[in-house]
Length: 436
Image (cartoon, rainbow, N blue to C red; front, side, top):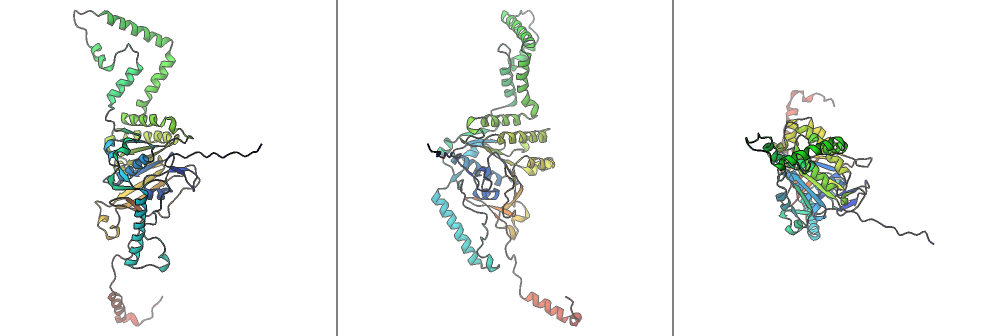
């Protein structure tokens, strides 16, 4: 008898890997540039907040990257939005690139960097010549894929994708309440649509039918039995059903959270099992379509319950929010919202501002601000080399780079120093000794 035992290694979830820095299971956000900034990918059970720009164009691009990565990795997808049509958003996902196309693209970028440095000439110290010029944040992604924003994903790939969509179009508040009431009530009780008819005054000269008498007697008997014998069980049922309307004043939050929790309760997403991963994407959460009298209270409650649901299963969540509109509604909500997420990334677009025509920002589409980087199950937070980041929205891809100013915005004329020196020498006080 030998003590040798064959080591069994469990296969990881599709589209995930273990981070060598934090030993966490991470998955790609869909954009390789964003993965490098946040430390290789999104940890399992985390929530990433993308604060939208004023025109809400660049945040939707990152959301499409997130969804397209889930389709290629054959992961479960949940897409919810009130501002966008989820079906149209899924149809416009970018097309993935093959391995050959990604290699060619990376070679072209390297050649462009090297040729750009030789053509423009070296204006800095010679020892910085070996360092990357602009795309220093770019690295080959070990997980994830590359996509082409100019082309759309094949319809057959979307057909076999496991997607769940929510846009509150098929669930009106009145219908939801009627269905819950009909399920909780007894079979002999009437629905909400028939209640006004019963409350109406009786027709003069008409006698109640025997069916109406029987139903009335059955209702009285069942009510007495429920009050006497099964009061405890009835109270628990009504309490569980009335819990959701009491939590949220806006029924849309309750419907959205209920659909997410039902999906995450599946056996394939149980924490500890390595079967599958669920990607939850919510676009334009907190937009004016969500406004009501209790907007701030409901939004904070929803994010708190959403974090508890995402933490307890194999899932990753990406949320885009118009933070500039929420700040105008109530500035105190901004730090509270950032406290309830793991990653808070703001996209500041140059469109419509003075920076759009400024020569220092002509190479970029906007700035990227890192407001929060959380440490999930680790002692240290991963931070990039620099927090001065900018992004470019090119024709085929969304690029995040280190922000740098051009070496010289305007070349100084050589005659200017000579004129200054001659002016000093011509002064009467120039012959006096100068103190250094």
